[in-house]
Image 1 (cartoon, one colour):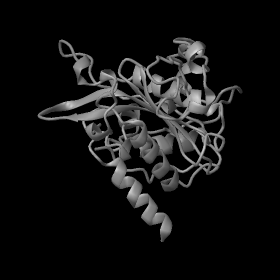
Image 2 (cartoon, helix red, strand yellow):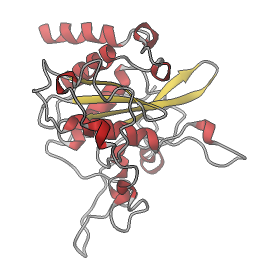
Image 3 (cartoon, rainbow, N blue to C red):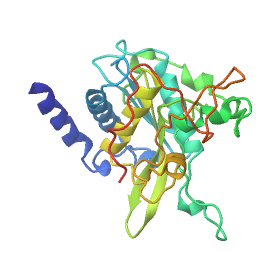
Length: 273
Protein backbone atom coordinates (compact mmCIF):
# COMPACT_ATOMS: atom_id res chain seq x y z
CA UNK A 1 0.00 0.00 0.00
CA UNK A 2 1.12 3.56 -0.68
CA UNK A 3 0.98 4.57 2.99
CA UNK A 4 3.31 1.74 3.97
CA UNK A 5 5.80 2.68 1.25
CA UNK A 6 5.74 6.29 2.45
CA UNK A 7 6.33 5.29 6.08
CA UNK A 8 9.17 2.98 5.10
CA UNK A 9 10.85 5.73 3.14
CA UNK A 10 10.49 8.12 6.04
CA UNK A 11 11.88 5.56 8.45
CA UNK A 12 14.87 5.26 6.19
CA UNK A 13 15.47 8.95 6.72
CA UNK A 14 14.89 8.74 10.46
CA UNK A 15 17.30 5.89 10.98
CA UNK A 16 20.25 7.61 9.35
CA UNK A 17 23.07 8.25 11.83
CA UNK A 18 22.30 11.42 13.72
CA UNK A 19 25.68 12.88 12.78
CA UNK A 20 24.62 12.90 9.14
CA UNK A 21 22.35 15.88 9.81
CA UNK A 22 24.16 17.42 12.74
CA UNK A 23 23.18 20.88 13.93
CA UNK A 24 25.79 23.57 13.47
CA UNK A 25 25.32 24.53 17.13
CA UNK A 26 27.80 22.43 19.12
CA UNK A 27 25.26 22.02 21.93
CA UNK A 28 22.93 20.18 19.53
CA UNK A 29 25.48 18.35 17.39
CA UNK A 30 24.52 14.86 18.63
CA UNK A 31 20.76 15.44 18.58
CA UNK A 32 18.25 15.14 15.71
CA UNK A 33 18.16 17.83 13.07
CA UNK A 34 14.95 19.48 11.97
CA UNK A 35 14.76 17.11 8.99
CA UNK A 36 15.12 14.05 11.20
CA UNK A 37 12.57 15.26 13.72
CA UNK A 38 10.11 16.11 10.94
CA UNK A 39 10.48 12.62 9.48
CA UNK A 40 10.12 11.02 12.91
CA UNK A 41 6.92 12.86 13.84
CA UNK A 42 5.36 12.15 10.42
CA UNK A 43 6.06 8.44 10.84
CA UNK A 44 4.88 8.32 14.45
CA UNK A 45 1.56 9.99 13.64
CA UNK A 46 1.00 7.38 10.95
CA UNK A 47 1.88 4.57 13.36
CA UNK A 48 -0.40 5.61 16.22
CA UNK A 49 -4.15 5.10 16.03
CA UNK A 50 -5.31 6.36 19.41
CA UNK A 51 -6.74 9.74 20.27
CA UNK A 52 -8.33 12.13 17.81
CA UNK A 53 -5.89 11.41 14.95
CA UNK A 54 -4.76 15.02 14.74
CA UNK A 55 -1.48 16.43 13.44
CA UNK A 56 1.22 17.17 15.97
CA UNK A 57 4.05 19.45 17.03
CA UNK A 58 7.37 18.01 18.24
CA UNK A 59 10.34 19.65 19.98
CA UNK A 60 13.79 18.38 20.98
CA UNK A 61 15.91 20.06 23.66
CA UNK A 62 19.43 19.27 24.77
CA UNK A 63 20.56 18.52 28.32
CA UNK A 64 20.74 22.24 29.11
CA UNK A 65 17.13 22.71 27.98
CA UNK A 66 18.14 24.56 24.81
CA UNK A 67 15.75 23.98 21.93
CA UNK A 68 17.54 22.15 19.11
CA UNK A 69 14.68 21.46 16.67
CA UNK A 70 10.93 22.01 16.27
CA UNK A 71 8.81 20.33 13.61
CA UNK A 72 5.20 19.45 12.86
CA UNK A 73 3.39 16.69 11.02
CA UNK A 74 1.20 17.60 8.08
CA UNK A 75 1.83 19.97 5.21
CA UNK A 76 1.86 23.35 6.98
CA UNK A 77 1.71 24.95 10.42
CA UNK A 78 -2.03 25.56 10.15
CA UNK A 79 -2.86 21.85 10.33
CA UNK A 80 -2.20 21.57 14.10
CA UNK A 81 -3.36 23.34 17.25
CA UNK A 82 -1.28 26.56 17.35
CA UNK A 83 -1.00 26.36 21.13
CA UNK A 84 0.67 22.97 20.94
CA UNK A 85 3.95 24.35 19.61
CA UNK A 86 4.91 25.85 22.97
CA UNK A 87 3.37 22.93 24.88
CA UNK A 88 5.59 20.49 22.97
CA UNK A 89 8.63 22.56 23.96
CA UNK A 90 7.48 22.62 27.60
CA UNK A 91 7.12 18.84 27.59
CA UNK A 92 10.60 18.32 26.16
CA UNK A 93 12.04 20.69 28.74
CA UNK A 94 10.17 18.99 31.61
CA UNK A 95 11.17 15.41 30.74
CA UNK A 96 14.80 16.45 30.38
CA UNK A 97 14.75 18.53 33.57
CA UNK A 98 13.47 15.73 35.81
CA UNK A 99 15.24 12.65 34.42
CA UNK A 100 18.72 11.29 35.19
CA UNK A 101 21.23 8.75 33.98
CA UNK A 102 23.67 6.64 36.01
CA UNK A 103 26.18 9.50 36.20
CA UNK A 104 23.99 10.80 39.05
CA UNK A 105 25.07 7.87 41.28
CA UNK A 106 27.41 8.84 44.08
CA UNK A 107 28.70 6.85 47.03
CA UNK A 108 26.37 3.95 46.36
CA UNK A 109 23.22 6.06 46.39
CA UNK A 110 21.16 7.81 43.75
CA UNK A 111 21.39 6.95 40.09
CA UNK A 112 19.40 6.85 36.90
CA UNK A 113 15.67 7.57 36.78
CA UNK A 114 13.54 8.35 33.73
CA UNK A 115 10.34 10.34 34.29
CA UNK A 116 7.93 11.07 31.49
CA UNK A 117 5.64 14.08 31.78
CA UNK A 118 2.77 11.56 32.00
CA UNK A 119 4.30 10.26 35.24
CA UNK A 120 3.96 13.68 36.88
CA UNK A 121 0.18 14.18 36.73
CA UNK A 122 -0.80 12.63 40.07
CA UNK A 123 2.43 13.63 41.80
CA UNK A 124 1.66 17.35 41.38
CA UNK A 125 -1.96 17.21 42.58
CA UNK A 126 -2.76 18.53 46.09
CA UNK A 127 -1.35 16.00 48.50
CA UNK A 128 0.98 14.57 45.86
CA UNK A 129 4.67 14.10 46.46
CA UNK A 130 5.60 16.84 43.95
CA UNK A 131 2.74 19.29 44.58
CA UNK A 132 3.73 22.72 43.27
CA UNK A 133 6.25 21.44 40.73
CA UNK A 134 4.09 22.70 37.88
CA UNK A 135 4.61 26.29 39.08
CA UNK A 136 8.40 26.06 38.98
CA UNK A 137 10.64 26.84 36.02
CA UNK A 138 8.20 29.15 34.18
CA UNK A 139 8.14 29.44 30.40
CA UNK A 140 10.21 32.20 28.86
CA UNK A 141 7.35 33.97 27.09
CA UNK A 142 9.73 36.39 25.38
CA UNK A 143 11.30 33.45 23.56
CA UNK A 144 8.20 31.28 23.20
CA UNK A 145 6.13 33.78 21.24
CA UNK A 146 8.64 35.84 19.29
CA UNK A 147 8.36 35.85 15.52
CA UNK A 148 8.34 35.67 12.63
CA UNK A 149 5.48 33.19 12.89
CA UNK A 150 6.12 31.98 9.33
CA UNK A 151 9.23 30.23 10.65
CA UNK A 152 7.39 28.23 13.31
CA UNK A 153 8.15 24.55 12.87
CA UNK A 154 10.93 25.19 10.36
CA UNK A 155 14.68 24.70 10.75
CA UNK A 156 14.94 28.39 11.71
CA UNK A 157 12.09 28.46 14.23
CA UNK A 158 12.77 31.42 16.56
CA UNK A 159 12.83 29.09 19.58
CA UNK A 160 15.83 27.14 18.26
CA UNK A 161 18.86 28.02 20.35
CA UNK A 162 16.75 29.37 23.23
CA UNK A 163 15.82 27.97 26.65
CA UNK A 164 12.03 27.82 26.72
CA UNK A 165 11.66 26.37 30.23
CA UNK A 166 8.23 25.44 31.54
CA UNK A 167 6.86 22.42 33.39
CA UNK A 168 4.12 20.32 31.81
CA UNK A 169 2.48 17.53 33.80
CA UNK A 170 0.52 15.40 31.33
CA UNK A 171 1.49 12.92 28.62
CA UNK A 172 3.79 13.78 25.72
CA UNK A 173 7.29 14.40 27.09
CA UNK A 174 10.13 11.86 27.32
CA UNK A 175 13.82 12.03 28.16
CA UNK A 176 16.26 11.03 25.41
CA UNK A 177 18.93 8.41 26.14
CA UNK A 178 21.80 7.72 23.75
CA UNK A 179 23.92 4.59 23.53
CA UNK A 180 27.49 5.00 24.71
CA UNK A 181 30.10 2.49 23.54
CA UNK A 182 31.31 0.30 26.41
CA UNK A 183 29.29 2.32 28.89
CA UNK A 184 25.81 2.95 30.29
CA UNK A 185 23.21 4.96 28.39
CA UNK A 186 23.56 8.72 28.63
CA UNK A 187 20.73 11.23 28.89
CA UNK A 188 21.15 13.82 26.13
CA UNK A 189 17.94 15.85 26.33
CA UNK A 190 14.20 15.47 25.88
CA UNK A 191 11.47 15.26 23.27
CA UNK A 192 8.00 16.74 23.60
CA UNK A 193 4.92 16.11 21.47
CA UNK A 194 1.57 17.92 21.56
CA UNK A 195 -1.55 18.23 19.44
CA UNK A 196 -3.97 15.45 20.45
CA UNK A 197 -5.23 13.90 23.68
CA UNK A 198 -2.52 13.73 26.30
CA UNK A 199 -2.54 9.91 26.11
CA UNK A 200 -2.05 9.97 22.34
CA UNK A 201 0.66 12.60 22.79
CA UNK A 202 2.54 10.19 25.07
CA UNK A 203 2.23 7.28 22.63
CA UNK A 204 3.36 9.38 19.68
CA UNK A 205 6.30 10.81 21.66
CA UNK A 206 7.26 7.24 22.53
CA UNK A 207 7.29 6.32 18.84
CA UNK A 208 9.23 9.46 17.91
CA UNK A 209 11.92 8.63 20.47
CA UNK A 210 12.08 5.05 19.23
CA UNK A 211 12.31 6.13 15.57
CA UNK A 212 15.17 8.47 16.46
CA UNK A 213 17.00 5.62 18.25
CA UNK A 214 17.32 7.62 21.45
CA UNK A 215 15.51 5.17 23.73
CA UNK A 216 18.41 3.25 25.29
CA UNK A 217 16.72 2.78 28.66
CA UNK A 218 17.16 -0.95 29.18
CA UNK A 219 19.22 -0.29 32.33
CA UNK A 220 17.47 2.96 33.30
CA UNK A 221 14.68 2.57 35.87
CA UNK A 222 11.41 4.45 35.69
CA UNK A 223 8.24 4.49 37.74
CA UNK A 224 6.36 2.17 35.35
CA UNK A 225 9.17 -0.31 35.78
CA UNK A 226 9.35 0.12 39.54
CA UNK A 227 5.61 0.02 40.28
CA UNK A 228 4.29 -2.10 37.42
CA UNK A 229 7.27 -4.33 36.70
CA UNK A 230 7.45 -3.13 33.08
CA UNK A 231 11.19 -2.95 32.47
CA UNK A 232 10.60 -2.84 28.71
CA UNK A 233 8.68 0.45 29.10
CA UNK A 234 10.22 2.03 32.23
CA UNK A 235 8.85 5.57 31.82
CA UNK A 236 5.55 4.58 30.23
CA UNK A 237 2.23 6.19 31.12
CA UNK A 238 0.52 4.57 34.14
CA UNK A 239 -3.27 4.22 34.26
CA UNK A 240 -3.95 3.41 37.91
CA UNK A 241 -6.13 6.32 39.09
CA UNK A 242 -9.21 5.17 40.99
CA UNK A 243 -12.14 7.16 42.38
CA UNK A 244 -11.62 9.05 45.60
CA UNK A 245 -14.43 8.16 48.01
CA UNK A 246 -14.02 11.58 49.57
CA UNK A 247 -14.58 13.31 46.22
CA UNK A 248 -12.20 15.53 44.30
CA UNK A 249 -9.13 14.23 42.53
CA UNK A 250 -8.86 10.47 42.03
CA UNK A 251 -6.25 8.44 43.88
CA UNK A 252 -3.21 6.90 42.18
CA UNK A 253 -1.81 4.01 44.26
CA UNK A 254 1.62 4.45 42.67
CA UNK A 255 1.52 8.23 43.07
CA UNK A 256 2.45 8.62 39.39
CA UNK A 257 -0.82 7.79 37.60
CA UNK A 258 -2.36 9.57 34.61
CA UNK A 259 -6.05 9.87 33.68
CA UNK A 260 -7.37 7.85 30.77
CA UNK A 261 -8.38 9.71 27.62
CA UNK A 262 -10.76 9.35 24.71
CA UNK A 263 -9.81 6.18 22.84
CA UNK A 264 -7.10 5.32 25.35
CA UNK A 265 -4.78 2.58 24.13
CA UNK A 266 -2.42 0.88 26.56
CA UNK A 267 0.21 -1.44 25.18
CA UNK A 268 1.48 -1.91 21.66
CA UNK A 269 4.41 0.44 22.08
CA UNK A 270 7.90 -0.81 21.16
CA UNK A 271 10.19 -1.85 23.98
CA UNK A 272 13.07 0.47 24.81
CA UNK A 273 16.49 -0.39 23.47
